[in-house]
Amino acid sequence: SPTATPSPTATPSPTATPVTPWIGDQLSAPSDPGWHRTPRVNPPYKIACLGAWTGNPWRVICDSETKLVLDGYKDIGWVEDWVLMDAGGDAMLQKRQMADAVSWGADAITIDPVSAEALIPDIEATHKQGIYVASNNESPLPSEITHVGTIVNTNYYKYGAAGAEFVAERLIAKYPKEKRQMANIRGIAGAPSNISRAEGCQYGVSKYADQGVKLVASTDSNWSSSKAREDAADVLAAHPDVRGWVTQGAAMLPGIVGAILDAKQDPAEHIITDEDVVIDLKLHWQYNFDFLCTVNPPSQRIWSIYEVLKALYGCPVRKINHFDPPIISSEDELHNIWIDGLPDAAYLLTHMTADQLKTYVKA
Image (cartoon, rainbow, N blue to C red; front, top):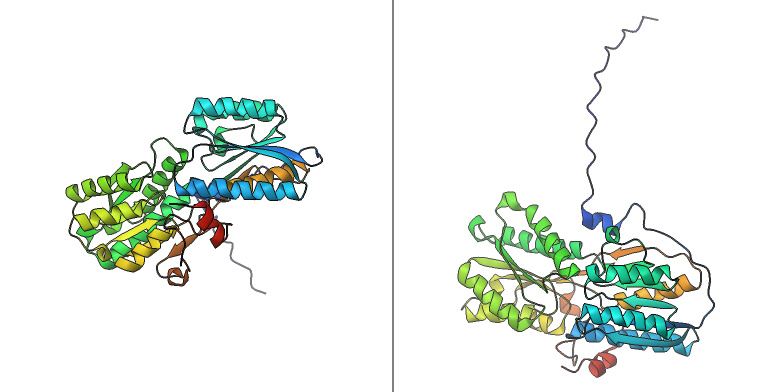
């Protein structure tokens, strides 16, 4: 057979620089989720739940779910006793409440920190004492804390990014470049979820920058519909071409719609994101604006209680449980959602029944 011609020596390609996953992707799919087991303790258990504050309907539902679930676990013999404490937004009070829970004899503690930074030393010290601690909702990032049992949290980075991407894509489809402007109506300054959602929003906007999409205003509206109305009015006065609004939840959408109407604009020309609140759906149907529900389930705490019970019983548990926010858009099934008779302030993605929502959500 003919002799093969030798191939020329190949020039090696330069080694590609590894791409670091965006933090939102890393939280949802961590390379090491921290699976662990603790020595089994037989039930029933004493469970202490520490809340940050109770000042809006989302937290009313969170607390109501907690009471219903813990009473259920008590009825079937898994929980001996439970206590739910409200820190009223006071980090120092929450530190004392954690010490009180230890003195009470808690087998495990779930905590929604008032300030993750302030409570990390208390969480770690308590967990090292052998009391299983689970954090939820306003948790520190896993990179910031070592000694904690499990973290159960909405992936707030992806929450913010999903809202920004939805608004950006609708702006591109509907408006010329000079009108592809959006505002970010945020929550309480300094809250971990507020920071993460804002960073996720900025990440989402950056993906469409070459198509003229701009984030022209950001404001901390304290998860208050009335404050959101004032801040949105200021945004429209300074940037009358804004047509996109990414909110960070807590039913701030009604305030934005009010500001749009006050400015003599048609809400149907706007694109708005918020959460799964009954009043938001009613306004969407009334004014026909593009709407995205980025859901922050209040059931994070009851999920953390479930993880606590698994851990105490000796089952494997993940340290990092960041879940992507459920998404419902105006092109999906919003028109099929049943809300007849539900309070305007009720959230829909909940384990509570319609009758329970009517009972617990008063205003």
